[in-house]
Length: 122
Image (cartoon, rainbow, N blue to C red; front, side, top):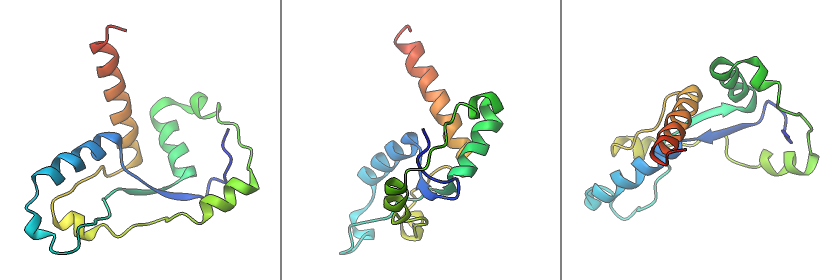
């Protein structure tokens, strides 16, 4: 069920990028951070509609037709207050990197799932 409208916009990074963030953070020279030790990580800003379009491009229209749209006003109100875009310029300057498109995030999920399934013999 899709409880929000397709114009809802959020900030995304793949799980693969999140793991890379941790490894990069573990190797960074802390002197570069100064007294500000928090960073907004890079990612992609996409609407739900853009996410669905990416899904159609990769998995086909039949897959996207499985999405049941049923807006829930309480959930819509909650997510409308979430950040839509994040300034990650400081993290980028420190060498943190994320994907460049939502389609890339989907491809990473597929690749990682196939690798995990193959490794587990499933």
